[in-house]
Length: 162
Image (cartoon, rainbow, N blue to C red; front, side, top):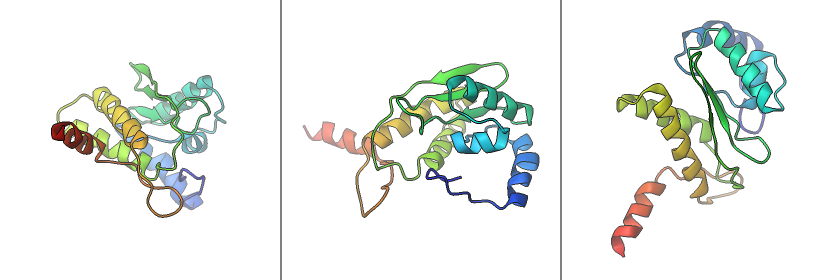
């Protein structure tokens, strides 16, 4: 599902994702709609998030980062890997600069792993990165604009000019 709720897969493809790919994954990063579809649990509360993440671990994923960015009041994500359960707390930022958040979070996690971080450390750093990329977003065109992947570089340049 996209952030707006559009389903991207046919029924057969969804079943293959759930039954064949999830068991192979080191980390899955579903949003609330995706986690509900994959787990069969309607997600409204933090307890629902925990139950759904647990079901996804039971489907074979080594770790789950259940993204709570569409929750009202906060954007807390749940990390669960069978040994560790952590809430990654973040404020909900009202912004139209949210295009690409899920892909950017996954890419930032992969980059952290490539740098030698543990899985949890990579996820933590990616969460901070994406929160700030949303906070420093910029509007282009109409509709949802992208997150600002370069905010750290831009702010470093501002500091060095002073």
